[in-house]
Image (cartoon, rainbow, N blue to C red; front, side, top):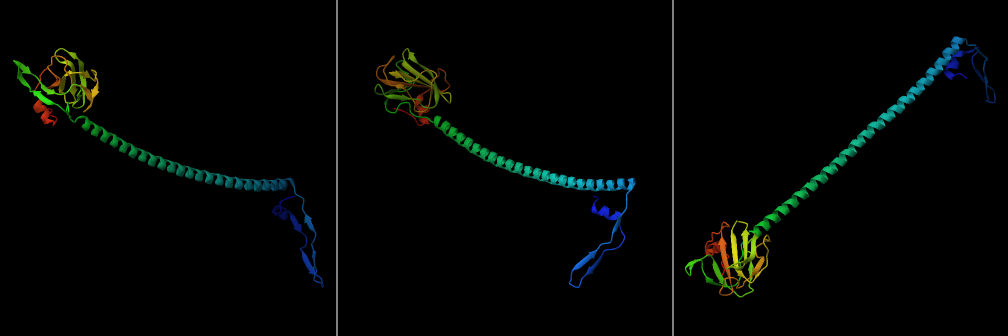
Length: 252
C-alpha cells in the first residue's frame, strides 16, 4: 500500500463521484471507476525515496524532541544541583559561624578563668594565722637576726604566702626542719624550726597551701616560726616586717 497522499497522485479518476438520493431519503453513491496507472522503475524509486524521506523526517523530529527533552532535563538537573549545593554550603557556613562563635565564647571563658586564677594565685596570705612576735629583725646577741620569730604552739599550721615552688624541704643545721619557697615574683621565704614538713622539693604551692607545722627543731629555745624574706632569692635577707605590711600579711 502506498501512503494516501502519494497514492492519490497516482490515481486518475475517469469520472467524478456522484451522489443520488432516493425518494425515501436514502443516499446512494455512485463512484466512477478509477484507472490506476502502472509505475515505471524511476517512479517506484521516487515513491520509495519519498517514503524514506518522510520516515526520516519523522524520526528526526522525534529525535530532536527527545534531545530537547533530555537537554531540558539536564539543564533542570544542573540548576537543582546548584541550588542543593548552595543550600548545603549555606547550612555549613551557618554551622561553621555558629561553631566559631561558640569557640570564641569558650576561649573567652577559659581566658577569663585563667586570668581570675592567675590573679588569685598572685594574692598574698599570712604564713601563720596566730602567734606572737617574739624577736625582730636586726642585732641580737652580738650578731644579726635575719628574720622574725613568731611564737606559737607546736603543731600550728604554716602556709605558703602565694603561688610558688618549693626549692628546699629538708633538715638543715641550726634551722632544723626548713622549707624554702620561691614565689612568682622571685621572692624566697625561709621557714625554720618546723616540727613537720608537708611539702617536698619541687612541689608547686598556691596561696594558703599548708607547708608544715610550727616546731622547736634545730637551734631553738622554744616553739616558734623563724621567717626570713629574701627579695632576690639569694642569701640577702631583709627585714620581713615592712615587706609583710606592704602586702597586708604582717603576723604576730
